[in-house]
Every structure is written in structure tokens, then in C-alpha cells.
Image 1 (tube, protein in one colour):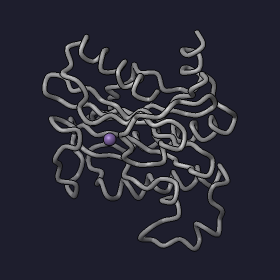
Image 2 (cartoon, protein in one colour):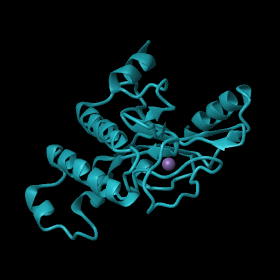
Image 3 (tube, protein in one colour):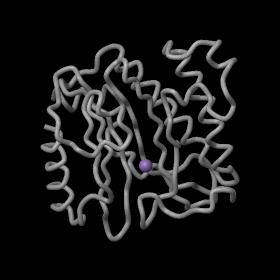
Length: 221
Ligand SMILES: [Mn+2]
């Protein structure tokens, strides 16, 4: 059951001196992942489905915010892995854009372009969808309808002046997703990163497995 996973996470968090979840956790299997703020966590995880887990611990008064999506049966289907790898590539590219001087709003436009190209590759959008898109609600929003990044700190969604340029030591989430109700799954991958003076941001969650093969290996080891 989804709540069994929630219970295991709480157990680990408390045993490691966290006060518990930083926010109400989302443990969403199958199509529940396509309900954006699903928090019921009361359904059975079924063979062949994916489980989207958006869970973060609070530690020393600070919040974390993480998402991973794993296969119930320990192995992704070919299609699930294609979409998974697309989300992961968007995440990696988006992370590189979190550098001093960039503006949050413009960053989101750039990530939208990267996501659009992945959705074309997956056959979820076609060229006409993109050519005819409404600039206020671009075509990619059909599959990725939330923001890519927000400030994080004492609060999971921390206060930040979003029209001011990014600065070193700001901490942001990076959390692209692709949600496909028609295919019965939704995928979100999320890490928290610290903007550096130079170069790519420092990934605070670099030790938490995220590559599809890594996850399959762990689940079948
Ligand atoms: Mn988040």
C-alpha cells in the first residue's frame, strides 16, 4: 500500500534525527501520480505501475523537497523508461541554467523549450501543436503543468524575490515532470541544488539514486 511506503520513510527520517516530513508526502502509484497534490496515499501499488514519491525530511529546522519515481515491479517498461529518461534529461539541463544572474521567469521559458523538444521526441506533441501554441499556455503544459523550480530553506516553498537575478548560495528545487493520464503514469524527478559562484549548481541530493538503471539494480539486488 502507498501508506506502507510513507511509514517506512517516516521511520527512517525519525531514526536519523529528522522531525519528520517537511510537508505532507505524496506517494502516488499509477494514475494517482497525475493528480498533482495527491496526498491520500491509500491505494495499492500494482505490478507494472510506477510510484511517484514526493517526500522531504525536515532537519535542523530546514526543509528538503525531493521526488523520485520508481517501478513497482523493480523494472521500467520500455515506454516508462523512455519518458523517465526524458524527464531526467530535462532536469539535468534545467539544473545547468541555475546560475548567478539568471531570472526565474526567463529560466522557466528556457526549460519549457527543453521540455517541448523532449515531448516531440516522445511523440506526445507534434510540430503543429507547437506551431499553433498559445504563448500564454504553451503546448508542453498539457504534460508539464507546474513550475520547475522554487526557493527552498526554512520552508519547503520558501520566500524569494523572483524578479531579482539568481545569486550564489540560493537554494532551489529542480523538478520537471511528465504526466500522461492516458498511459496510466506520471513521472517527476526533483533534487535541491545550491547556486555556485561559478559553474553548475551543487546538488544536495547527488547521493540519492536517480538513474533508471541504478534504481533497477537497487530494486533487484
Ligand atoms: Mn518542490
